[in-house]
Length: 313
Image 1 (cartoon, rainbow, N blue to C red):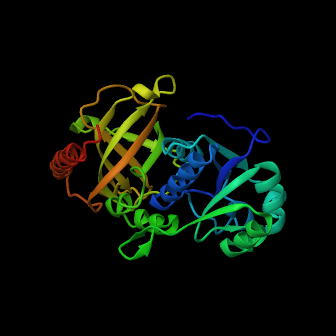
Image 2 (tube, rainbow, N blue to C red; image 1 turned 90 degrees about the vertical axis):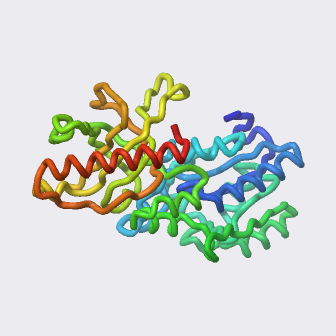
């Protein structure tokens, strides 16, 4: 990403939002932002927040996020913006009235020459400001505002909450139709029960996953071992992923187990990115290790075929 803009340096074209998931609606906003910025020779700037303001305003009801801050910035940068400004969410900021947020943040701090926002944009304390108020403020101030219509899929607007519900129900392929990139989990490999290796299907057990987990079941995916030193050269592997309890062994704990098809090596303490493609089946209880082994072979074969068809590695 080219960072050719810093606060107070120059005027810019700005969009403000959480951009959780970076879905097709967000991509539409970014596309309009880039077009306007190019027309007026302005930097295209995204102003976003970390953590989500809801974690401070209503922590018990705050949604689990679809993307980590790093993943969100990566996806926004891939769309071509000049800068992604991540504002630490502070109580003083989210308590600003809508008019104050417009004057102090959008105009004074960001020096917005053009604003680009979605149809459902909200801002200010208690989300009191909406796109209609923003239109009035911009008109009074002589500021250009571009209002972007929703992107519709199956007759409904694409939204982070809609995608969150789909993923939570296991419908990862349906969610993918609304996302700018495959849905990704990132986790750290920890020691597991080590049952997979002896039966020919070693798995990497992931912990510390901060984003939405797909519903319990088995999934086809592509996965990569994250190398902080050379992430641009990393290799993607076809993968079979199990999410849920190991009910065949009487365990209730929820685990995320990733079998990297064709991979050999030590993964402990490494981070793995898992890009979901398709749900294969529900979690099942097997009467014997032999039955489990037969089903795992089927899962791995299906996952490999799906990954090849998706051309993701």
